Image (cartoon, rainbow, N blue to C red):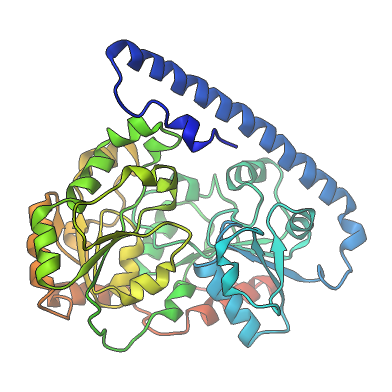
Length: 428
């Protein structure tokens, strides 16, 4: 529903002042086209949903729709809490009528067998499942819908039937208005840490008992054994919402892009990687996909991992050290008690344009050093490469943050969802 990357990227270089005005006009036209296609797409969603609701009584008693649990992430992927929870249901509770929502062309279909029940994303079967499912369970708010943004807003006016469960995509650390009760009507809001649950329950406006500290389902897949050094350093920065639908020219001029490129092309980093026989794997956010061709490195030990062709959790398990900016994947690393570096080169800009400060303070609550310059990153890396254990002060913080440190997260989530159907409340 957006212009092809090639069209978006035609004005990448060699522009004069007059041409830059033309580029701005081009971006304005592009945005108008995007909004136009969005409106058509939303109308299509609504018509399909209306038709599915009209014929749903004819399908309600069919075996495949009776007491249905619809599990998903975003409809296009399966590497997160949705996948782990679906696997748990198949293994421990095969009596549950559960299906997983996934697009036909998703590379994550490789994680499923012929015995699994997949519903094709945005098919009419998907719309029927959306209408009829008693439990709608996703790692994203409205991730089980054909369009998350549209159906989240539609649900504010026409409350969707069924119990909506938010497994979460990661641990919340910032204030996220779209997760507040006036934007998201949920029966269960799962949290992965006690301080997070306390902050969300106190500040997001959900009724008592909705916000629960149960642990993230995917944490059941993290190992407890002592980590064996792999020589792998993972660099995984998050996205910047202000760059959504930006032209390639605008993207490469951003502070975000420049900060990443400075690290990838650092000579001192290259020397350290070579000396220590290590690799740095750059795993960009999925939103970066249209701009992948803009990234390069002069260091032979740096490798770019394309979104959609990697197993994110396996990377988090295998890597020795994580470098990130603000991505919540660092909680997965902290859960394993491994080294973390926060490379926050645009902190003021990020706080102003993306997320306001939440309860979590990186310098006092984080699980690794916070730096803003590449030389500092390299200095901390060098020290961490000679130590297999997280520094004591950071390890103490993890103990206080994760009161649950076990492989019972899926079970707790399942018990809480079943309790919804039994009308039982619970302490958070």
